[in-house]
Structures are given as C-alpha cells and as structure tokens.
Image (cartoon, rainbow, N blue to C red):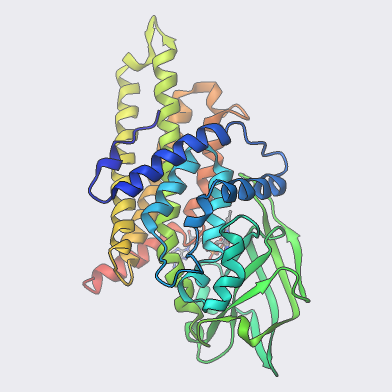
Length: 385
Ligand SMILES: Cc1cc2nc3c(=O)[nH]c(=O)nc-3n(C[C@H](O)[C@H](O)[C@H](O)COP(=O)(O)OP(=O)(O)OC[C@H]3O[C@@H](n4cnc5c(N)ncnc54)[C@H](O)[C@@H]3O)c2cc1C
C-alpha cells in the first residue's frame, strides 16, 4: 500500500482526503489488469468507466454552475492515484481535462454546455492541439493559419504529437489569426473531430503507447463562434491551461514513482540474497531512502503549486514549473533505481517496473520540456517573482 501520509498535510481539506480514499477503492477494483493491447479501445473504455464512476466531473467545470472552478488539488490527487494503478487510466483522465481546459477557463456558457456536459460524463473525448512540426517548444511561432471568411474561420496547416488524436470527438486548436507578431497573433478554437477538412494525417507510436496523431487542416471551416476567448488571446489561454495542468503532470510522475517504490519495497523484503532479505543490504537501503526522499520532496512541490492555485493565485508559473521539472526528473531516477533493485526482472518486457520505465520518459518532454521549465523558473526568479 502506497504511503498516503501526505494527505495529512495542511494543503488539503477533508473533501480531498475523502476523494483520495474513494478513488483508491474504485481503482483497486476497476483498474486491475487493464488490457492495453488496443490503446484506442482501452482509452475509450477507460473514459466511459471514469465517467460512470463520476471521476470526470473533476476534469472540467460544471457548465450548469457559474461558480464552478477547477480544483487543482483534486486533479493532482486523481492523477497521482490513477498513475499509480494504471498509466493509461491516468492518460484518459488527463486528456479530458487538458483537452477542455481552455473551455473551463475561458469558454462561454454555451460552449461549456455543448461540450463539457459530455466530456465530464465520459460521453465525448477531447484533445489539446498546440504543437506543430516546426513549433513544439517554440509555441509562439506556430504556423497553422485561421483566416476570416464571412461568418467562418478557415483553418489551414498541421498539428502534431496530439494525444487522443484519432479518437477525440473535439479538439482545442491554437491557430495564427495575426492580430500581432508571434505570441500576440494566436487564437484558440474549439473544433469538432468531424469538421470538414480536419483529418488524421498519421498515427504516431511511442515507447509507452497511447493514442497520438499528426492532424491535417485543409480549408477546415468552423463558425466564428468556435473561437474561445478573444482574438489574439490564444497564447495566454494556452499558458493559463498549462499553469493548471503542469502540476498535474508532476502529480502523475509522483504516482509512477510511488508505484516504483512500492514494488521495490515488496521485492526487497521478499527476495533473499546472500542468505538474508535484500532489504537488509545497506546499498539497497540507500536506494530506498533516496527514493522516499525524492518522492516526499516532489509531493511537497506538487501540492504547494496546486494549493497556491486553488487559493486564488492568478498565475503559478514558477511553482508549476518547479513541480513539473523536479517531480518528472526525480520520478525518472526513482524508477531507474526500482529497475536496478528488480535485477533481470526489471527489464523483462511486461513487468511493472519495465512499464513504468517506459511510461515516465515522455513526461520530461511534453507540456514544456524540462529545459523550458528551467527557463521559466530562472526568468521568474530574476524578475523577483
Ligand atoms: C508522448 C507525447 C504526447 C504529447 N501530447 C501533446 C498534446 O496532446 N498536445 C500538444 O499540443 N503537444 C503534445 N506533445 C508535444 C510536446 O509538447 C512537444 O514534443 C514538446 O513541446 C517539445 O517540442 P518538440 O518535440 O518539437 O521538441 P523541440 O521543440 O525541438 O525541442 C527539443 C528539445 O530541445 C530542448 N529545448 C527546447 N527549448 C529549449 C530552450 N529554450 N533552451 C534549451 N533547450 C531547449 C528540450 O530538451 C527539448 O526536449 C506531446 C509529445 C509527446 C512526446
């Protein structure tokens, strides 16, 4: 059983503790041996299951309640717990939030009602389409163009590395509308998957498989009302969404790391080496201590960022970047130690730690690579924030 003593920390309210306990019970019965052989089907099934369980109601604001807000601590607790049980379940949950984050934060009442009612029940899948072949880290220079034509915007260009690409029902798409140079000329749009001119150009395979695609927009027409927020506000919208969701990526990394520690303790206490349990070897104890320390330090940064956002901070760029940078980096190290403790079984295809080893890597690249997080932190510190 993973350490849950962190739930006693003052960052949390009783509703968070109740959420963690209820989700733990649900995950322990519903996420045993999830079949990952067909990731598209697995994700559809997981979204439906998460919707039925009521967990997706945390992924976006309630369109019928104008006071409803995203609660970042709940998002983090859910992602940490799901990641500890099953990486694809965490992915399925995360995309329902990231894909609709712009609507939750900047959508009109009508846009929210149209889409969030469905995504929060697991009846529609969503995706976040920001990256392009020439602009992944350099988001401000994205090329996909949206031009006005009567009552419509017409989108032309490409997006790539789009999670849920190919299975999403709706995409949040960031496009150049040209109100100003660079970051000042981008707007956000809500684009249904069946919009004419939008197609999947290529499905992409990665070391920890999940639905991923390159998308093509050829004269893809959407009504002017598909714009989220105001013209030219797209970059700010994207960064605001990432401010909320970056700590949740860090939380997912924390969940993977906790699972790696659990597996390691179980291995070290059950396997005998040189006539005694492995756990009595001091070098193994050293690994376990390092792992536990990294996990607690990461958890402090994750839940500090989440608590700060929930407490009303407008932006938490520095804290979110610190949480993501540290937690994903340290989780990589924790999982590597877990592989070492498992010996040959650690690299055996299909073992839990082998799966974690593949699953953790991309988290240091997407939603802002680690190097980019360092730049964000340094700029904030130099500016005195
Ligand atoms: C599994 C996966 C899922 C993804 N899902 C999505 C998604 O759902 N939606 C979406 O829009 N995008 C998604 N992405 C794209 C992801 O956000 C980009 O891959 C990421 O931003 C890096 O962009 P890039 O791949 O073009 O690499 P580049 O921008 O070419 O960067 C390459 C490397 O250069 C380094 N680097 C970058 N900038 C700097 C700098 N200023 N200083 C120093 N070093 C730097 C970093 O180490 C970086 O990894 C996903 C990517 C992956 C791998």
